[in-house]
Image (cartoon, rainbow, N blue to C red):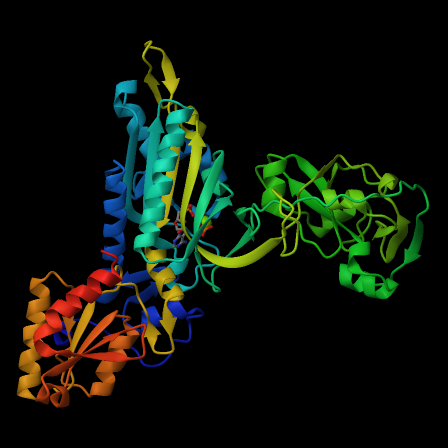
Length: 569
Ligand code: ATP
Ligand code: MG
């Protein structure tokens, strides 16, 4: 490609709306442009990267025997009613009505459609196992679209679905996809981790997330260096540290705490540490009002709570519900005398002589002990923090940040049961198919790669996904020999199958070097008047400071060698 002919609208100023580096650089380097909140156009440079990511994914999926299809982006309500997700999906599912008053939605994911396809077409165990995938647009009406294409509303996803005759088959399919994902993310040049994850809206029995390690990641990864346990914070379990505790009862006293609602305020007012307080939170759930107790200073993990109690929804109760339930205002709730079911974090079992809300304005109760109220269940409901005990060993937990680029789920019978996706087994008996589903954020990968590779001058992209592998840059295009050699090198590299950009613009050298760095192209061949006098041209790797002088006759061979090394071929 010739730079002079390409549509590359670069921007010098740092765009104001962009919070993270990948978003800034994608705008500045002319990769993407915003149309509306969370909705972007991919420009030629960005699209080249996106296509390379797609190709890597395609190759690795095909190697595992998965077959590519494309399913509709617009889907009828009826299928979503069958799976019960029409009600459950919430506002991320964008619903609308056509001219005939039929209700439709834009696909946030494709379990319903693929299950419908397979139940209609697959009859016998002989046609299974089957794994189908697509690379296609999804729409999710995210509450907070942000960070450019990292959390868009319209975005590209690779989604795959496996269908097996039994649990063992489904596990084998899951393992194949797991391996494909490891290969894909290695080829993308990522530093990444695999963590246990919550299965969220998609549902199913267990799942893993693939996380690119980056400080700006939205997800928090909890891990143990001792045993290798790693989980998304949403689901991270916490080990229990048992201590002896003296069982005392009825020593408690009511004390005035005027205007002190928050844990820190009450602790400061009473002159005690926050962990001597018990936090009582009232939740509204589909199973009624419940109370959840954790030690002061800790947070409740609502995802874990939801999973533990098998709830469809859970939200903090409103002030009026709190008043009705406890008799006191928000900020003064406590477990003593409450008649709602109380669930306590296991730490609470080992608390002694603590403070709780008095269920009355401006009152707390001190010298409380665990036998002063009835707990329905002690469970692991707190948000993990660094330093907590590992749930699997004696080690301690760490936290790091990550960007979720892939998510695989074992679905089991969830969709095949709801939608009756059955086949005939060897004995001619009808059985339900056992399913798995596997997503990759294709557009998010491009952003994640930039998040992981950048410096003050721009992107530092892995050769496998950079828009070009090499730039050939004649310093002065009015110098005939420079231009002639640049064209010859460009042609020679194209013939070798190298993805190369010739910066043939009549621009100042500084501008050309800057653009080349900004776009993150891994290798630059600089052709200058001075070097040519000695028969030399220059090679520079984007991630390195020093350049190398090479004899001009050797340049093609050297560049090919470098590119192969960069792509680990
Ligand atoms: P998240 O927790 O980030 O919302 P998710 O669990 O909803 O992700 P999945 O339903 O598993 O995501 O989708 C598969 C993949 O699609 C994710 O791993 C992620 O890489 C990508 N993805 C999900 N939502 C978005 C989005 N709004 N914009 C871009 N990519 C997304
Ligand atoms: Mg999501």
